[in-house]
Length: 430
Image (cartoon, rainbow, N blue to C red; front, side, top):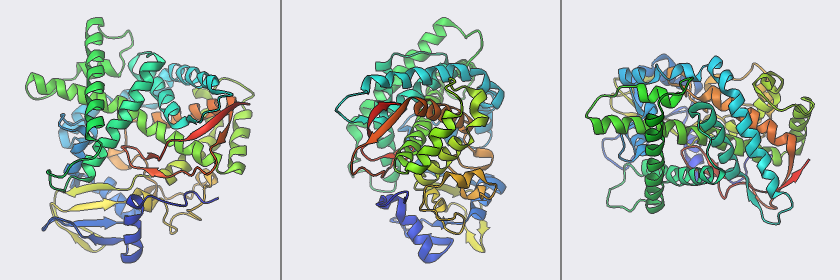
């Protein structure tokens, strides 16, 4: 079955330009003197993100993602980026993640088992929201040693998605006059105030308690020193915490939502996923089972290939040449993960949902960039796979799903690509 039949034009416009004009194409921009080049080949992705990554920095529009707050790790460059990432790295390595995986797995099981309350309900359940709460709970327990009430988790998920929709719209409209109204402002600003207030409470509570016996990520952040006056230093601390909590959960949760959405629309693939889980013999899924769940990981990867972001923008810090074309200092380059993930030169039958493609060694890794590649690859990517596969297995062990008739997965632009209208299902016990 085709992966997506009626795509969002925000996602398809760049691939269409690449199809017409080739792997290096100049894009028309609303402001005079602004040069933007679309790059549509894995070799050029490798050039920008790996081999010559120091020549390219995040576009200034990306700073709209923090709406007036100090920048967090993904927006930093150079020595400041290294100084911030270095103390966090150990907590996202394999050994550390294996160590906190029991807390993560327990949280996932608890939240997934709680879905039993929906069995027999006539109303459609928004599984996209429920998955957000599952992932948020696993993240908070494993990385921040916090157990939150279900109602609180639900509020965090809703607020984080309202905020994410708002800030992405700000980034998209960055070059437009400031006099033009920005969509989603009222809800977005309300969500921001709520989330920042909750982060303030986390910080105050931990400072009063002191560090955990085994220092967690919040302890690491509290031990960091940031440049600037005290107010700015606190803002940097809060921005880092915000990025790790709210942006961190969204990536995994939306990838899970897309995985299940595409499984539900492809019964033969879903049957294989159930078989992979059943091979565990009913055991509670733990970190140790991951090596037996390669098919679920392949489903997770294939869903991310189809999910994909519409664009990734960088600014050149020096003159460069790519594919024989001059890239002037100060100009911008754009990569479309959505287009790259669907390019038939690098993917066989890219319109199909076929997880088996990720069980081979034939994947061009520069053509698959859900977490970017190179030195700036997402620090939390391994955690996303661990929690994502554990959650997927726990869900399939317990339930079958009935999807609302006529529903199709459509791309919703947020900080991580979501599903328009959520994922409406009825839940049944296996």
